[in-house]
Length: 412
Image (cartoon, rainbow, N blue to C red; front, side):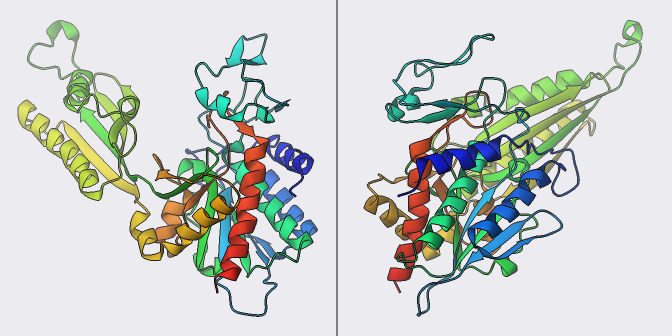
C-alpha cells in the first residue's frame, strides 16, 4: 500500500518551495528559484535508491530504475514539471489539510472571505469523505505539477522497496518552465532513451489523454499617426479604433469562455495601445489541423482586408506555431494508451479518455520522438487560489504508475 502520510509529507515539502516561472526571462530555467526544488529532487532520487541521477545546466533531471526481470522489456518513462504558473503567485504557499471532506463550503481565508464552494466548483462533490489539500486563499497550490512529481517519486520508491513487482527499465524526467511553454525545449530525448513515456500532468482522477490542441501565437501590430487633435481631420489615424475593428471582426463566440470539448478558439490575452500604436496578442487553438490552419488564414485575411480598407499597411500580423496535436504521433503506437487504460481498470479507476484543451510537455515530446500520453495527477482548479488536490487521487496515480510498469513487463 502507498502511505497516505508519506504522500502528504512529500507533496507539502514540494509546494512550499516557490518555483514560479517567468515568460519574460530568456534563461533556462527562467527563474533561479526553480533550482531550489530541482536540487532537492536530485538528492531525494538518490536517497530512495534511483540510479544514474543527473541534472544538467538547464535543470533537467533524469534518473533510472533498473529492470528487475531477466528478459527484454521496453524502457518506459514518466515525466513531470516542477515550475508553477506565473498566472498567480506561488510564493509562501501555506497548504491546508481537510480531513474527511463533508461536501460543504471550505473557508480558505476567513479574513479575506475566500471560500472554496461546491456550489461553484461542483467537482468537489466527487471527493466527499476524502482528504483534500487546499491553499489558504492567497496563493496557488502547485499541484500542477508537483503532484505529478510526488507520484512518480513515490511510485519509484515503492517499486524499489517491493522487488516482487516485476518491471523493466524505467526512466524518470523532471523539467523546468513547462508553464511558459518551454518544458520540452531542451529535453534530451536521446539521453532519456525510452521507447515511450507518460506525463503525469492531468487533472481529475481517471483522465487519460492523447489528444491536445494545435497551438499558435499571433502578434497584431496596428500603426497609427498622432497629430494635434484640434487639427486632426484627415490626418490622424487612431490605432486603437482600428484595433477595436480587428477584435470585433473575429467570431465573438469562438473564444475560450464560449467553447469546450473539441471546439477551437481565438483568445485575445493582452492588449497595449495608444494613438500611435496598438499591439494585440492572441493565442489560436484547435484540435483539428485543417481548422487550425483556417483560423490562421482568417487572421491574415482580416489583416489584408483592413489594410485595403485604410489604404495603407497599417496592420501587420505575425503568427508562430507553438505545438501540435500529439494524436498524430500516438495513434501509430496506441498500445501505450491501452496499457494505461488497462492499468486504471485493474485498479478500479474508470478511465476518462478525452482531449486536452491545452498542451503538455508530452505534446512536444511526442513530436521529438518520444510518444507521451498524459495521465491524471489529481489536482483541480489549477493556476489560482482555488486549486486543490485529493490525497486519494495522488495515491491512485502512484498506483497507476506502478501498474503500468508491471503490465509493460508482463506483456513481453
